[in-house]
Image 1 (cartoon, rainbow, N blue to C red):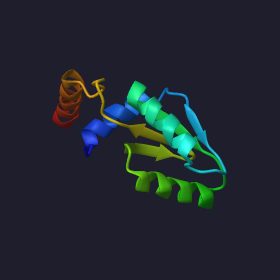
Image 2 (image 1 turned 90 degrees about the vertical axis):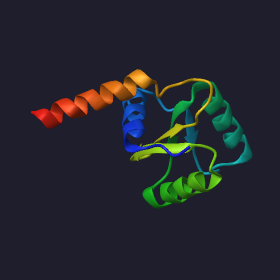
Image 3 (image 1 turned 180 degrees about the vertical axis):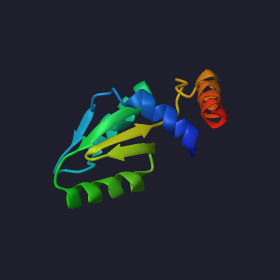
Amino acid sequence: MTLNSSQKKILKRKGHTLKPKLKIGKGGFGDENIKIMNKLLSDLSLIKIRILGDKPSRLKKFEALIELNICEIVGSIGASVLLFKKNGLNLLEEKDLIEENDSVDEKLSE
């Protein structure tokens, strides 16, 4: 599932107040971290993780996360990354998309 910009905007809004559920350190994305991340994503659908280290090492770990291809990356700011995996929970409800479109229409009409 590829998220469009409206969906990402909704998920970023919902994920803004989340605390990081997992911290990725020197070990990177080992088997144990992947298991934990999969469990969190299947339970919660939207999680925030924190990638520790300096910028070059964070970028390498971020690229490794992309290669795993187990979830959709909603966005990242600094060392925090917001991840989404569609499951039984519907975080992208129809009413959210309608509200989002209405607010965009209101801004355009001003």
